[in-house]
Length: 449
Image (tube, rainbow, N blue to C red; front, side):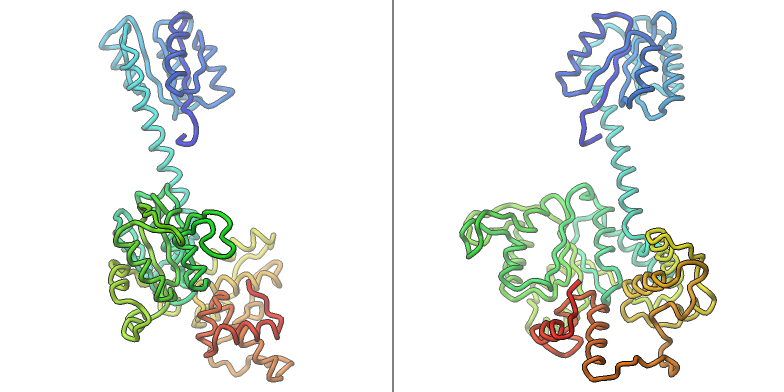
């Protein structure tokens, strides 16, 4: 309802009452329809949705109280306001008992009726927002809220505690544990839920690009800046800013970000005007920021500014009771998308899933289930369909091509998949720089996803 004009129906057998009220509420911005009888009102309700009905009680044929009963059967969410020139306590009590929102006596002040209608529409709006919020929370990847372990219940308790505040949150965990999903859950449960959630992957951008991405730029501020552009901090105004992989921010941008977080003002690249911004910050990292502070690669003052409230997401290997509920969630999701008639996991497959350590966590588990469904069209998923093997298994078949290049390609691809193709993190895990990794990807025909 917040994105459309409220719809209002006026039911009265007197033409001048219908016309005067219709004119009044149309000027107030309502979408107004009128009906001269209860029968006509029900016919309109059968064709379209109405938010609020204002109806006279004393009318020929079907009176207002009877009309109210019929409306309750058609659409119980319609707000009904009754008016009458023949007031009595018993009639008012009966009307309110049967679900009327309010009861006014003619002659009434139009301003008073406007106030009642405005309050009724606010009630409808809050109810719709509550429904929308519940749907939004339910849609934030159930693999997070499906967790049955004590550890994940604790994580969700922390989310519930911090979400209603404006406190800055640091979400920490290994790659693939669901840090961004937790950030989205915090936003969805916060008072800023209907504002924007703006995400920035700080590890995927160079210093100059990241600075422009965060703060925006003015036309002509650098080569290629052909127009003014708002940055992510400005776009997050009224909502939440999610800074993923915050540990990768270069030192120069760290200084500018700290100022923005402390003053809640930003200056676009190439600009001089200070722009006020109002956003809540949620950060995520899988780096040891304390070590980065000691090494001097991450500012201590920025660290303290962003690490006000910390949520640690445990890796999947430390909460094995979550593995099967999450795997079954992905099985239903991917089977429906692929049209597979798969009934579940065989006992042997379940045992394999439970024994595996999942270095890529929930993301790796999702990939494993999806790949299994590519080759399994119906029946149960068996161990041979899963792209994993038990740790330390000597029976794992060797690939046909054992050349150095083939082994290197497979290893690079595996690390990239574990890091969700984050080049910075994959290069660090491989012990090489980003340029070398890019060159090897080109050499082996590995495309960035």
